[in-house]
Amino acid sequence: MSTNSISKHSFGKVVWKSPSNIALIKYWGKKGNQIPLNPSLSMTLKNSHTITEFAWEKGEGLSFYFEGKEEISFKNKIENYLDSLPYPFLKDYHFTIKSKNTFPHSAGIASSASSMGALGLCLAPFMDNEQDSEFFKNASNLARLGSGSACRSVFGGMASWGDISSQYASPIENLHQNFKGMRNSILIVDRGVKEVSSRGGHALMNNHPCRQERPKQAYKNFKMLQEALINGDLEAFGRVVEQEALNLHGMMMTSTPSFILMKPKTLCLIEEIKSFRKKTGLNLYFTLDAGPNIHLLYPSAQEKEISDFVKGLGVEVTFDEMGDGPEQLSFVGEVCGR
Ligand code: DP6
Image 1 (tube, rainbow, N blue to C red):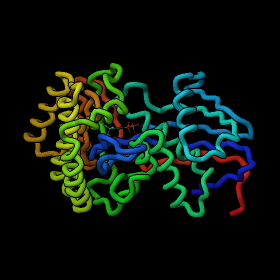
Image 2 (tube, rainbow, N blue to C red):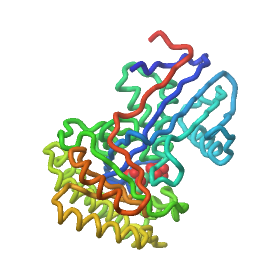
Image 3 (cartoon, helix red, strand yellow):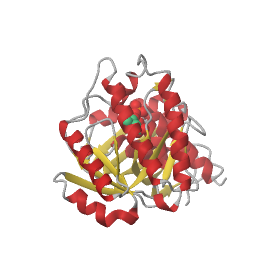
């Protein structure tokens, strides 16, 4: 993949397609500037993307379009983000950003992960990139500064953040065959607006009674999951992933103020999932984001039996699976001869 780098006196346009991801070990709570309290690990999705066209020329200011329309609130967020970056030379450019998602709004998929992932990738050529590996580290770091979870979207398969570095994510190596192409079906329980933003949720950890204990527990779970992913241990995978999801919701329930983000339907579905697992012995597990929708996780080899069960649950479902990571769709511009 050509990742390119940009002459400081250039103009041009790049288009990146970046996926969303679902966290298996949850990033919850921050210290300093977008530094996570604990290591996290996620699976990159295949079908849920943001496509961002990013054009630059000498000048100043920003034009921003989301799905064809000028979007002032997103534009303000991106302006604040660009202003916050420690790269003053970015102020010498006018940027035109056109962004769209391949998944519907409120579909239980984190759009900040895919959109900030795409933006990080578009901005990375402005950094000095001697090697491709540095390009993706830079893109991940830039994505993190916009939204923590986005730094993991820059890599395919599974990625971790906060273990090797807190500045950028890294791909998980040696993933066992059992986890390759893992399925993620999202049960849409509620399409309502989020009761608490992620930013607000992370801030609840500042004075949380578990602030000291949570990083230790997350680290233990992280290690157990890493081992399960290498050994192909689906049961250990499920145990850790479900515990992480319930921990996240437990922390929100015990925050001040407290939030109950699950709906009665979420609990009913969890019961159904558990009894299906008990009855069939199949490896169907769940995780939850900071909301009521359920992300089902299961091996591709069991897709047939499990997808029949999922379709019979009587809720709206978005089917996705593990993906290969972002893709650069085009690059036009002046390129440094480094
Ligand atoms: C529950 O990455 O959305 O999805 O860094 O403030 O943008 P900001 O937060 P964000 O938080 C994601 C929280 C989570 C868990 C996770 O993805 O690890």
